[in-house]
Image (spheres, rainbow, N blue to C red):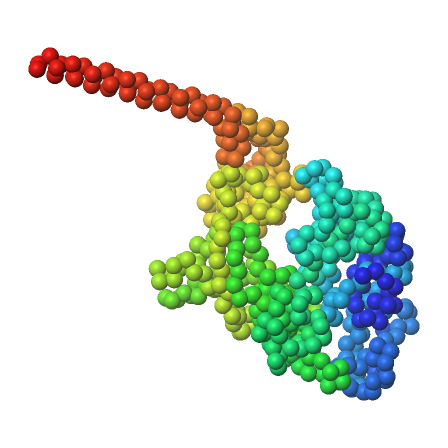
Length: 545
């Protein structure tokens, strides 16, 4: 909803976007608070209400002589409390778009940007643009504000024009409206025709959110809820409220509700979202595209900034397979009580799994971190990467480029022996030219990157292109690496199969029609010959009689 900042804070809701006015407004990013001050304990106030002293419900009052920014506060014990850096916001504006985020403020953009609400032209006093470009009808083919992005939690947002597109799809609801696709003012739900529609997996629902923990008796789905609408409660579909992974339910006598408390000593689990909210027992994946997250959760403040290693294995009857171990292990750093590593399952990972005949195509992965072992994650492969249309790095998009799921980096490099154990060949995305290009390197010596250039459209089924190579020297004392890299060249290669299909659709269709007609003609001609032969034989028999 859009309201004043003070009203949002009174509701204990999280500010997502600052607004200059209630509607027809400019936007402002919610900036982390970097002030350092001192905190004092006061057990008499809890969001403005005198409730007396009580663990887990009292608040601290924070003050800083040098600045008066608001920060979030953490209760330690009856006599001490800490100001938590990084979640406050002063800003210039008095209005905000705020959301009931159950006590958390995960305002980071997910890697795929699905939780993006709008883009802003600057950090403050900004115009806005839609979250995702609209390319199918060229209404807004490319985004202009790629730096100042407003994202939140696990929101899933879309753009809908009231008259061109109709209502929000599925369970999405209008978050706000814009005066245009870009360079726009921000309005309330009904101010403008262009709507930003969003839904959140962890909010709302038939049962979750009514502030009634239904476990004795269970809810109408015959499921027992652990908590309801308190910190770190999340919804599982429309069925029940449960605690966020790494938390367990506990009753609060003062508030008279169940809330979720962090499990002492932390926990580890698989997750399907970037902020580690949803625990994952199984997952359908597309090899080379689907990303899964490995989480170690521990609220011990001393762990923040500590790096941990995640080693992944595949559970087998006859000895587990090493998937990502040793130098190939994943790493992550603790931030705000969580270390989160991401894993995009590659063809190589699947090949290393080596399922036995007894297991068939079942893939059961687990990981180890700091001596702890995770639960099993069952993986179902729904699709392998489409490699028929990919011959070289240039055929990848940005998301596919660095993964090289089709393992074509070696086919993309001229005169380079990628089988040489001293040479590492790979694909990398060229941000300047917005294209995937090949590269190679010799560890400790240097790297060679390529800029590929072509205006060929494959109309003759062959692609002619040129490249410029650049050597980045580390310690190439004898100059061998630089000489091997060269300065550039050109080549002609067959086009990917997908591009060649356009030729088939027109010319080959004509050829096939002619061939089919010819076959039917020959069949008909053959039938006539057989008929004449049969008549001749019949006449011969009559003469003999």
